[in-house]
Length: 276
Image (cartoon, rainbow, N blue to C red):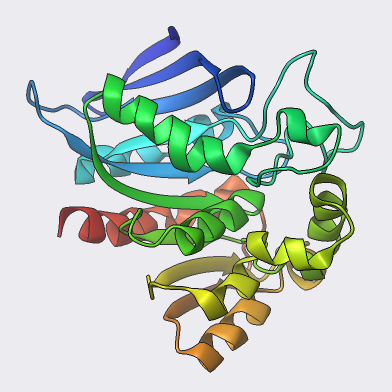
């Protein structure tokens, strides 16, 4: 591993690290905020997954997360959104390829060679964090948009692995919206039965754990009606009795201004589960 950045922040340290990922077959970067702690102390970890076109920088520079993490004494890990590099398949569109990994394990060429972001986020990265830093195995996960999709799917597919899950403006039913249909067709192929493994709404019916889901959604979000459609998830959750809290906020869009406005509530939600 190589540390690329280090900054003192709210009594702790914001870093950016680079490492060679065996899962993805390329170098990856992640942001790591560690609050002040005693020698030998192990702190719980919140994993943040960013959205389309983002990398490890967006959340750590725009959201104001460090103050909340310091207050609740949790580590925050923010990985990049896809594999990167000259040998990694890409597409000129913003919503496919590098910067648009969709946090799944691709099965189709040319994507399958590198695009295994689900395994990276759920397995390889936590193992690295818990081995090399002051991190315990108490984990939670949250994200935004494509990253909200990734967080929900990770929690639903791996009962017991996370203490809490939440999302900002997530893609809750990717198999039913243009972003997801495009990405799933490319990464997973035309068989829609395979898509259900990566669709949070579809996964609810078989969920082995009723982990409460917190979602915040801006009502001025330009993607609300055609790409996000949170009501698809909440209606299915109500039918199945899965606990979901959806909070809708007039005047808020899809940006980090929206995320920063309500991030304190999400950290409180996660900290209560991680430290309870």
